[in-house]
Structure formats: structure tokens, C-alpha cells
Length: 209
Image (cartoon, rainbow, N blue to C red; front, side, top):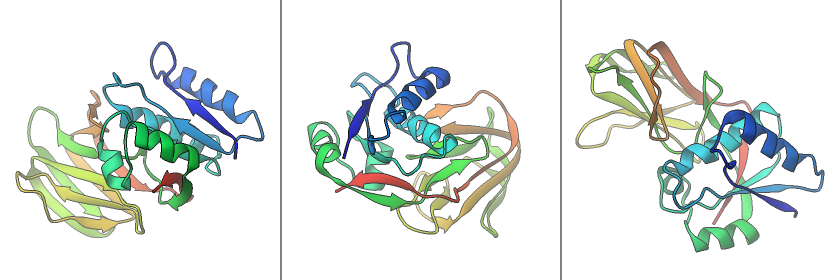
């Protein structure tokens, strides 16, 4: 196994700079694993990890193994049962990779931790389906979406004070009049009419305990 570490570019995780960095790593045919290392002061480490996977997806290189050295516990480390800090470093170097469902959205953005469908400055007004099952129709605080480690691949629930009521499927689709999408804790400013998170046709490889 030949592994290369990937950390954010010096000016942040701009898409073009990150794509060049990952492409340069993949130019070495002996590389089989990327160790993704967000710094301790990274505000949204899951977002950076998802961006790296997105580059591999777009370059059709999901054969590459990925190890995640998260500086702190995150939504993604919880989902995939990963350590953080020094234990994550040890796992990244000696652990074995497992194929998992890859969840992405219709904007070609990968999801590793948590996403939400929210209303712009109001309750979300519309409807959400998980596969063919309707999750809600009307007004809700929001919809929480998370990847799964097993098939069918993704789950969603209505956002409430007391979590529960998960529905699982291959796709979660929301259509609304005032929809904004939050990915890995980062809210997008643009209002859209529809957003879908779904299982990609290829899996990805994650180093897990």
C-alpha cells in the first residue's frame, strides 16, 4: 500500500486547488490510499473530506481507498464509527478499507455526515419523498438527511426537538417553494425548488475499524 496525505490547500479548500492537489497525488500509479487530514482549526472538517471524495468521484477514481483523520468527533465519524485525533492517524496507516454506499446530491456534492433541507427564513413549505414514500407534505422545520453504512444507502427524518422516525431508501428528494440546502453544517445561500440526495452507482472505500 502506498498512501499520500491530503490537507487543505494553503488558501483553503477552493475546488480548483483541491482538484489539482488530488489529481497530482493520483498521478503516481502506486498510490492506493489517500489519508485526508483537516487541520485542528478547520471549522467544517466533514465538508473538506466530502470535497476530496467528490474529486475522486468526478475523476472516476473511487478505487482509491480513503482514510479520515478527523481532528475532532464529527457527524461523519459518528456515522462510520471512526476515531478522531491520534487513534484516527493510527487507523489510517494500518486499517483495512471497506466498500460503502456513496451518497451524493444532484449538484455532484458528496455527503459524508449530515445534510438538511430547510426553508429560507421560514418553515420549509413543500414535500419530501424517501424513494416512493412521502415523508411530509406541507410545512415543517426541516428535513435531516444522513448516509448509511449499508444498503439502501441514505435515511431522512423530519427535524423535531425529539429525533426519531427515520425512513431509509436509495434517494431523498424534496421539492419546495423556499428550499435551501445545508451540507456538512454549511448553508448555501441560493434558494432552489428541488434537491435530491441519492446513492451513486459506484461505492467508495473507507478505512474503518
